[in-house]
Amino acid sequence: MKRVLVITGGGDCPGLNAVIRAIVKRASQEKEWEVIGSIQAFNGILWEPTEIKVLDEKTVAGIHYRGGTILETTNKGGPYAWPVKNTDGTWGTVDRSEEMIRKINYLGINAVINIGGDGSQQISQQLFEQGLNVIGVPKTIDNDLSATDATFGFQTAVQVATEAVDKLVTTAASHNRILILEVMGRDAGWIALHAAVAGGADICLLPEIPYDVNEVLEKIEERFVKDRGFAIIVIAEGAKPKGGTVSEIDSKEVGYKNRRYGGVAAALREQLQDAGCKHDMRETVLGHLQRGGIPVAYDRVLATQYGTKAFEMVLDGEFGHMVSYRHPDIISVPLKEAIMHYNTVQEENYLMKAARGIGISFGDKLE
Ligand code: F6P
Image (cartoon, rainbow, N blue to C red; front, side):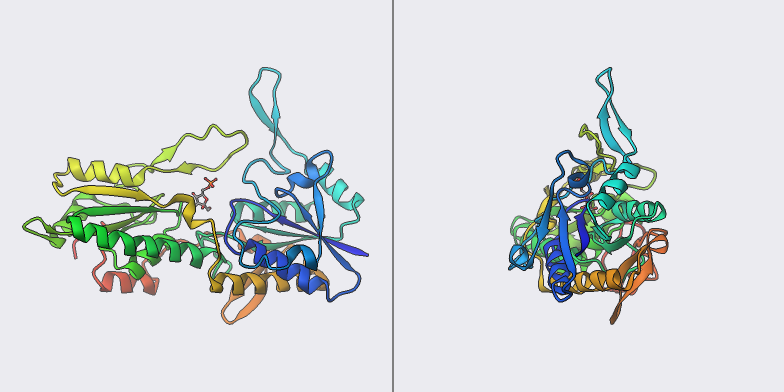
């Protein structure tokens, strides 16, 4: 019997379960293959006792529309930065990758499918370089991986954000207010841009374009006549004012390496007040509502294609590669290439042209 180990790492994302289900269903057509899942990314392998489980058709039945991941996940630690408590009570990290690879071999595992974002695929590449048979599956609601046209989970996040804009419009119009919606997107503003266009927002502020608060105010005033009117602003958590810094929250979580963003909507409200904005303003932080819950059909379909392709890549021995969507095909790309560039919003992207074309302000210049 041959074994493939499935890992879900990093932040969760709608569609993860659909990938797992597709891997298992495709593998079940090959008599000599068994699928095993590690609990909480690579932790399940690194823990003593090991926490892994056999995934068969019964385990994955009906999970394609469930949010989260049946394997659990984590964005802390990992094989290269395993948290350990020092004798003085502080925390440090150790590299347990060699030991983990030995354990994977000892468990009779022939290949690993690592479903994760940028950080997880960097781990995939490192493990591949150390001799592990790894295949990557891209995952992120931020859609910030450049080697693929799309990542599953993104459309679900956009749908949630757009519905939030739709709801804010009615209350903003009733009260003649400015409503600011803070959405996810650390370095790439794709969720904000899509939700602003789909929801008809007036202003969209992105990590890629530092905003000038006076330009934002100018656009707001355009929307108010004698104090009557309203405005909707969608702002990505990683946006920042010109010459300013991003709104970060200090994370005390042990082993958490990511920067934690939050508070940019409240910061913008204060900046607008300081700049002389007299209209009522309220902010809404959408947070993890964008990551939880049922994946939309598009994400389930993409995730299913990623899952079947990943297993086919195992059969073909295409290790050190990541699954990728290049319309209309599902292909494989070297992991090395996949982690090289970030997919950020560029001015040349037609969606930017369309957004500017319908009068959305990015707080960078007067229209
Ligand atoms: O990378 C995906 C993402 O959703 C970011 O947009 C966000 O900043 C981050 O994860 C939040 O992570 P956590 O759940 O660890 O707070």
